[in-house]
Amino acid sequence: MKKENFVSADDIRSAFSAAMSAMYRKEVPAYGTLLDLVADVNKATLDASPQLRARLEETDSLDRISEERHGAIRLGTAEELSLMRRVFAVMGMFPVGYYDLSSAGVPVHSTAFRPVGDAALKRNPFRVFTSLLRLDLIADEALRDEAARILGKRQIFTPRAVALVEKAEVQGGLGREDADEFVQEVLETFRWHDKANVSAELYNRLHDAHRLIADVVSFKGPHINHLTPRTLDIDAVQRLMPERGIAPKAVVEGPPTRQCPILLRQTSFKALEEQVSFIGADGTWKPGSHTARFGEIEQRGIALTPKGRALYDALLDETRKVVRPAADGSNAAEYEQALQEVFRAFPDDWAEIRTEGLGYFAYSTAPDAKAKKLSDADDIETLIAAGVIRFDPITYEDFLPVSAAGIFQSNLGDDQRQEFVESPNQKRFESDLGASVLNEFEHYARIERESIEAALRATKAIEP
Ligand code: OOG
Ligand code: NI
Image (cartoon, rainbow, N blue to C red; front, top):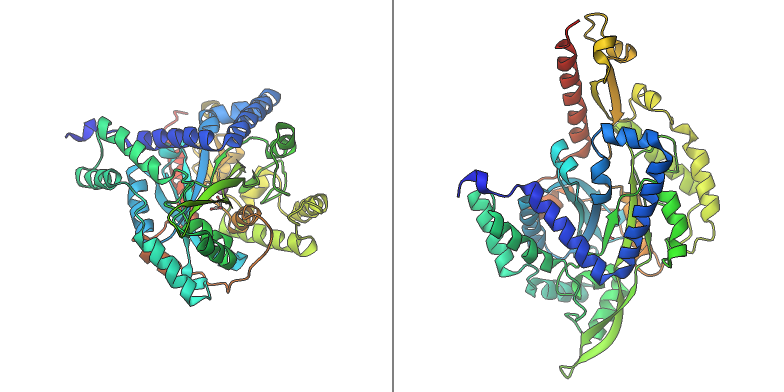
């Protein structure tokens, strides 16, 4: 087949993201309610702020807002992780970032599969936060072996999905029919299965070791555990959730409300208790329940430089020393106030964030650059001061380990916390993945650098 006849990876990703959202909406009706609420809040926010609407239109990102979402899965073995990498590659999604969650009491380490280029992100920014269970952090050796044995037996992809991945790799893409089939086959991996792989007795032992281990090991595949639309006003959605009959987690994770949003703010509704059945000794199914699936929302702000990120981490740490948010919400207001106060130390003005080197910006010629170009200046700062070149925040497309841990914790049913020895192991993760992960800071720095070069070239081309 000629290359021109291949469906683009961006189109396959868009189709997959839409199919996944439709499936999850059916499986978890509360997610549908959340989507409706987010759509209402986004519309109200845009109606109330023509300025925001104009900025999103200018930077070409208005269309993607309602399309946008991320999801999360938890895998059990290295083989699953490396095959998942190949599946996502067909959809133009590549591993970015390494997240160690052991220090936060969750026995996994993770990456995010996502599109990387600006054009691909604008087309559809669908991401999947993907965690790999770390059985090496489980103390009980017998249980560890049993979990490994069960995981070793399962096959999370359909034979057709695997065949189509191989075909895409050999050909360099998929034609229309294959692409459609690929989306349907891969969707199967993320589907919910209410019949467990294990007995209730084993489920309970896994569960006692850590609820997350039970979630990964006991089922046939890595069910999508949440999907997350993007909202333009997360505080409004958090406030309105109870009115629509859904229970939000205690506090919004991440930075406080600000004029100039930074990084990522997230909140979720609590995971639902669902009916499942376990394998009985006599071959019959025994009824039980499991909590795993929820809905989440996110609001994204500017990507921070290592200097900005260090300041963010330090301020978050400082806040949590003053007030640690309780899972029952009893000190939520106190926590929010402490967060607001401590974060006063983080400049809340784009120009200041830029001059202090705290965030990444995309540079371009201003709409009225021609009128303002009075000299041959070719220095970026002079051109900015003259209004010839403008700068816009680059959106943070990744995740935050402390926030992710908060999301994990609030959805593992209760707040029983377990301690693991902090043991990041990026090398091991990458060897299991079969590839290295992209460093997100280098990635944003490159986007910024390329935008500066392009803006300077465009400025030079303006006839005086
Ligand atoms: C993943 C939690 C992390 C986020 O948005 O930070 C995440 C999980 O619960 O499997 O999705
Ligand atoms: Ni999430």
